[in-house]
Length: 350
Image (spheres, rainbow, N blue to C red):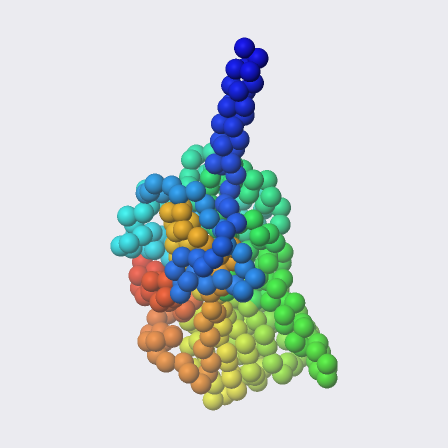
């Protein structure tokens, strides 16, 4: 009798442990990962993760935070366009978008709500680089794949996709700021640096640049993040000589470079593409299908300079609406046209 009871007790414990394990999040496994041409590991130290395979099609949510600029609006439109593309649409049962603003608690609440609704994956631009531990644990418990992209988290517990001064507190802003300072303050450099916060927004960047010009009078060069075209507009309005400038990937900024390089705007246009959302969505689907994935996926940053701008290839001079020009990652099958993205609804971007 006692022996039978003990065996039955062990069997129950075994079943319970199996149930917990099934919802304990991804396993750390050996590489290589799936589709390495698209999902390239960040470095040779990047670990690989594998989630339990789920049958599709899947319920996927995009939980955006801040939305008050061109990049974020275009990103949401790109997500919608990608969810409708052949080869992706068949894998998606439901695709929802929500933008929660800059409050971390609101973003966490939205993610928790989607988990409780039975969504299979959440792609997100994190409002802050930390504070997501509880949501990650909840996602792991429910076998939900969480994929931060662009503004990533200070953790190695989730799969992430990553490639001006922008929104304070975001990992992208922080990392770019630290990299800029490290170079400019390197040995032998003696620059007087003025910093203003443009929130990755054209209008805000134009205003704060105009204020800086009014106070300081002259600058020899400019490094800016989103809202680059606003920075150029402020310089022109102040009749400040155009100077070498490194800025984001807005089409309007690239048009400005092409038109005014001869006047001194020796520009470089770099920047993470809003199409990162497509790669993050594609990575989430791959993970749900049980494929081995890098924990941190590296996407090359598209770059164009005043020397290699080509109309109709890396900028579109005939289009007046501002948008971010780089939208192609051919190894991932991501190849959007500007009209395709701009035709999407802005619903759920606010």
